[in-house]
Amino acid sequence: VSPARARTSLDEIVAAGRELLETGGPDALTMQAVAQRVGVKAPSLYKRLPSREALVAAIVSETLEDLVRDLTPLGRHPDPLVGLRAVATSYRAFALTHPRTYELLFQVLASDSRPTPELNERVTAPLMALTTRLVGAERALEAARLVTAFAHGFISMELAGAFRLGGDVDEAFGFGVDALIHGLAGWSPRRSSGSRCSSRR
Amino acid sequence: VSPARARTSLDEIVAAGRELLETGGPDALTMQAVAQRVGVKAPSLYKRLPSREALVAAIVSETLEDLVRDLTPLGRHPDPLVGLRAVATSYRAFALTHPRTYELLFQVLASDSRPTPELNERVTAPLMALTTRLVGAERALEAARLVTAFAHGFISMELAGAFRLGGDVDEAFGFGVDALIHGLAGWSPRRSSGSRCSSRR
DNA sequence: ACCTGAACACCGTTCAAGT
DNA sequence: ACCTGAACACCGTTCAAGT
Image 1 (tube, rainbow over the protein chains, first blue to last red):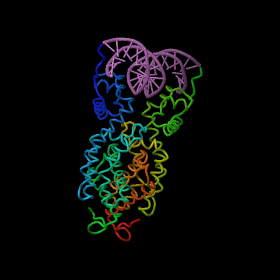
Image 2: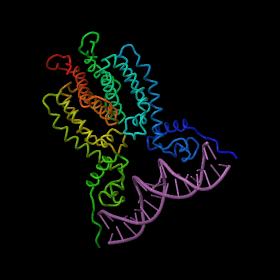
Image 3: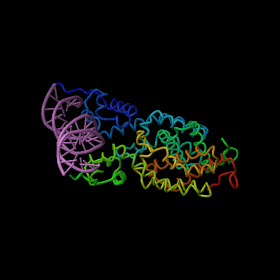
């Protein structure tokens, strides 16, 4: 006879999930809401995905791919100090435009929900290229982690509303990145141009 | 006749909730599991708490009170640089011993679940005392926020498993705090003792 | 005054039955 | 080969009924 034809696709499901997550937060990301958005009933989703957790993992991965696209060109900036600030700024801008998804990235996810090591490496590569040039290959990983830690901490405090009172938040972020990077630059195997003392910006 | 006597208390409920949260994560913190632990049925919990969300808020507040007890004495250290490192180290140690609860602190909670501004102020006070002495009152708030941001970012990456490969994590945290603080110290209204150049540790 | 069983509206997920 | 209704085991929460 006539077997039922596919009425949706994995891509469409993940796209619907991303919209629901950003619009209403994790609680709004229900299998039924996703199904309704792609014009199907909830049980049909299990033809494309094994579980809701797998859907979350797919959303995270797709979002990280977007981030990779943003960061990759910045890793090639001729001046590593300028490049690092650009990467940090772009990373923050990305987080602020996908706040709900961003929060998920650093959550303790079940191991199945984690992005692959390969994807993680591609996200970090532009930053690593810059810190390698700034402090040498031996210290590059640690420096990259410290910059990421600062940026992530700042952003998650910002998203949690910790900066609601007072001050120019953009400027504070820039100051912090500069302070950290100049502190790290003291590690440099080769002296930076000019004095080794960090200037007052 | 004989009206039913209380078989549990709010304190006991919150304590049970804290244990369940740390043992099994947020998913294990169900009203039924809490009720069973305090020897009662789930509906009875609603005599002491309006909702599960209120229970989470109470858990967060009690945990923050513990943190305040840890940090307060450290804020009075005579050397602000040493004090800042001690506060950062103690903050991290606290987070690592209550990882599940710590994750909740920086989540986007419904406004009802947020700790009160008063409690938040008491958590921040020791750090503010130190940054005030380090960079002056005008810059103290911003400096405190940057140190908190770094520490939080580092810890949440650590909890998410980002540092699983390689390196001494304790040492990396200390390095990062030092780099940031020395960067901030460049803001100081009064010069620090000795050279203004940060030493290589 | 507190406790309880039963019920309600939701979840995610499974599966037999349809086309 | 995909879709669906019905069902299952769970949630948080409400409430009338017990003591």
